[in-house]
Figure 1: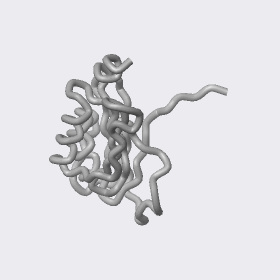
Figure 2: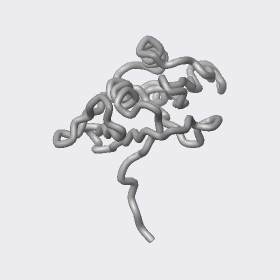
Figure 3: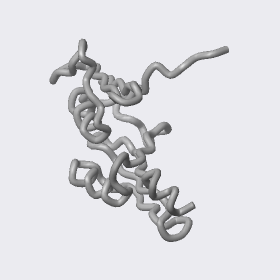
Figure 4: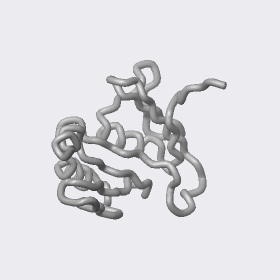
Length: 132
């Protein structure tokens, strides 16, 4: 058996608003032939570097409890703490702070997007390499 992941799907209450929020966070873009518009009940964004796509679909019910699948973000150009500060300024909320959990310079921060979906911010590749 063989398959590949076409895209990652996120159930949400407002597909356009949440896709726009994540588009900025991830530096993704709309599909050229299928731009996202207010009121769309399905919105997709794509990473221009890797082609990874995230599809936001409106559903009537909120997520019951903690989401079982989440994004782990690694900063592209800043360090983890700068990325966390930027995300908080962009509207994320702090859920749990695990910085230093395995000693100085280690760990991650768990945040929530505007609809309460949890995601983690890891150290950048440079930070992780410097710690090794």
